Amino acid sequence: DADVTQTPRNRITKTGKRIMLECSQTKGHDRMYWYRQDPGLGLRLIYYSFDVKDINKGEISDGYSVSRQAQAKFSLSLESAIPNQTALYFCATSDGGMKETQYFGPGTRLLVL
Amino acid sequence: AQKVTQAQTEISVVEKEDVTLDCVYETRDTTYYLFWYKQPPSGELVFLIRRNSFDEQNEISGRYSWNFQKSTSSFNFTITASQVVDSAVYFCALSEARNNNDMRFGAGTRLTVKP
Image: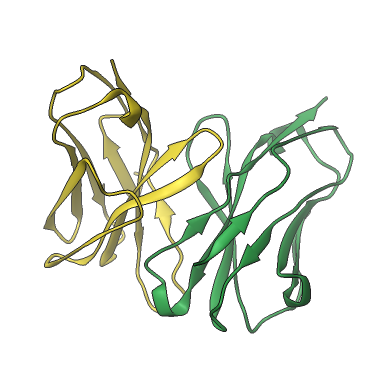
């Protein structure tokens, strides 16, 4: 079984709808991240969390919110989806420390019409 | 702020050719980490390597090798005797120790290996 899972894998929604993307991990890592990937822009950090009580904004947090329900779960919400939020979204985890390496989920393709 | 530049948007080679993917970075930190990830057509991101700023030794892993040069702020990735399965988008990334929550990615290089 995959260490980092994301649901759904694909989602089509309409402008103005609220949607939630979920991420679960079995790696036992404290740190979790949400990124979006757009063509030609690489990955950009939306939010990150170092533990259940810690939530931090990333480079592009506007229009998004997150919830860290447990060490293993980190959800990303689009409160009112807009077309320019159409992207590939990745969740990642890491164990932190000086040798931090992030491990990524399979991604969620989101299309906002 | 840290920055990663992958100037090559797309590269196309024929199988068995060697290919080098360039990565140039900017940082003001003295302690930082560099990464390469592979994104095959299936879309997932696969971790390839991590390097810290104090270790400039080049690394070889099978057909893959990495050349880290602090003098030119580069962390280039070479695939020797490329294969069709190497076709993917490759991302270089940088995180600073003082800010290691914030990993900045380059825009990626799409490598196509033709049979």
